[in-house]
Image (cartoon, rainbow, N blue to C red; front, top):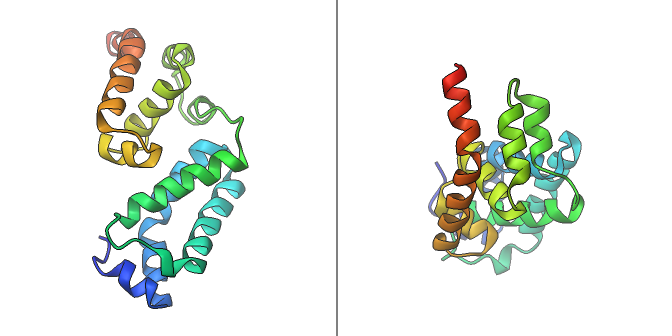
Length: 163
């Protein structure tokens, strides 16, 4: 659980507050960075870079923005700069057995629908969180998720029937 006063503490230079934030958010930030970079070392470097930049610019932190979502957005932006050509589907192929029909269906989706589907279904991000990360409305996320679900439904139904 994030400290509700974390932003204010960090803005005042409380290194312990930053350390607590890092420990509480690392797994989620790392998971997103890994999904976007496809590389463990790059993912860790992205998270460390984002945390360092936040510390260096602590005076500009907005107390009215949810800090966990701000961090996710920064990880997203930094990861896309570090690895702009990485396909998030690769981590599914490499880490999940028996996903061939789903991977095929995902590859047929437009990139935004595919990415939003992966953030929601494999990383557990809510529509609100995805909207904040991508700087779009929740309605936009809903639209792309609907498109994604239409595209992957046959593969998901096939998995259920096969199982």
